[in-house]
Image 1 (cartoon, rainbow, N blue to C red):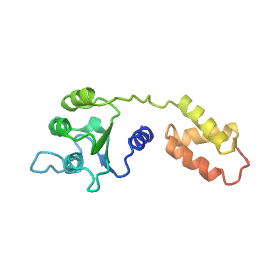
Image 2: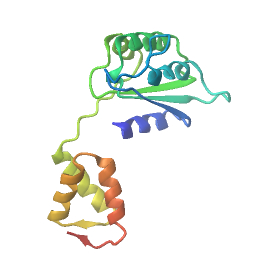
Image 3: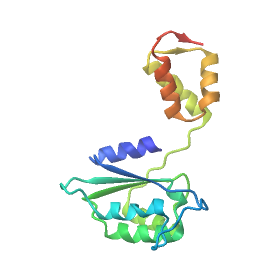
Image 4: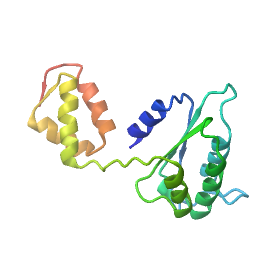
Length: 171
């Protein structure tokens, strides 16, 4: 999902991206005077201000499903008046975004759904990625990689990059 979000920001010609990782609900994070958790608080000025040089800036909000209702309401209000030519925001969620924000995003934004990666599709991805790196993986190597990294294609890709040094059959 993050790869797709990064690709969207690149398509929108955004160079400077502010990443906000929303903490899990009940994580015990401190709240500011405005009722927003400190980790989320920096999202508001990021959505309100563009670049000093007139370039479009990006905001990447990861785990948006963890936003609290009060946070979602504030962010929704800011998005309604945000300058789309100055700021591009991408919200990545592994579930439902809280209602106030979800409604605003449906009305103002394009939604892209990314299916969860299963072990079978990770196996397909691994086979193609190994082929792209000119690697030949034996059945034992494929099983070991999937067992170790599961569906984490980032980790699988880094492991393949390390294995690609030899260009031999990996067993």
